[in-house]
Length: 406
Image (cartoon, rainbow, N blue to C red; front, side, top):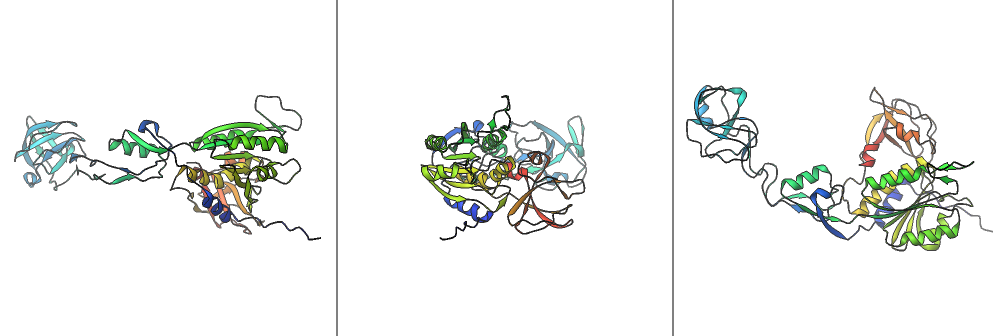
């Protein structure tokens, strides 16, 4: 009889590369109002049809002058006109100044603005107590954006900044990828919803709330199929239903090797499993495959494992499916460990930690995969390589939750 040898677990980098290679971005595009495009993914590069600013204008309240008229450092000039923002002044005659307000267009003939704090007005004459240089306090036309330039590339996930930029060049509508359609369900006869009586041996289904919120933050359309009984037939049935009209199926629980863990055989029966078990802690039993036309990701049932594996593996995969081309790899920072972690693990660990008052990192005392309080207490995770112990004072790689959730 041939001895069974389990397949080696995939390294984190291998798992990420496998998922990235499989990702097929959604092709459908829709045009939406720029006011309604927050969080959407731009389907086509946007080009400015104008210069911003459109014309030379002033950065300050003050007086528009000819710099040559103020060479003495104490020039007395007649105030010939007043130019508020949104109004066009008359050409500036030599020996005169124009009272001007922030954002107003520079009148023809003027080549500098002197801020009002450096001026003294008496009647209709202003004394300029400054020697301005040509161009001083003037925003030049096209200084920010030039006509014909790309302001937003395709694949940009639109935030408040990008929407403001689009609006600044007059874009009232934007072409975006349709929202990713994600089906979710949760396995385990022990799961109970908050608000219901908690029977002996039962637990509240925290993962349903955590994963739905994470998907909502990524702008997904979510179909929640709820809690599925621990049976192979029930799991297969809901998988078939989820595969209809969805781009991605995400489950929580049932991906291990116990007698009541039915996700693996159900996916293999209804589709195919491309990846199972990663050399990561927490979260080893992470599954990836396809059911029908939908991708499948099976997350562990332990709440911290589910949370961490979503952030590290599912988030970049979802972004790729949405067509996002940037910010797929979260930024990590080298920081000082203010703790000891003497027991190295053979898997890549993601340790919950937070920044202390001294600018170092302190570790949550209980790194168990079931201690959800560590995710609320912490500022992020330490990406600790396999076989690596940590001593106080060591430099470690820290990934803030803010990098994993934006």
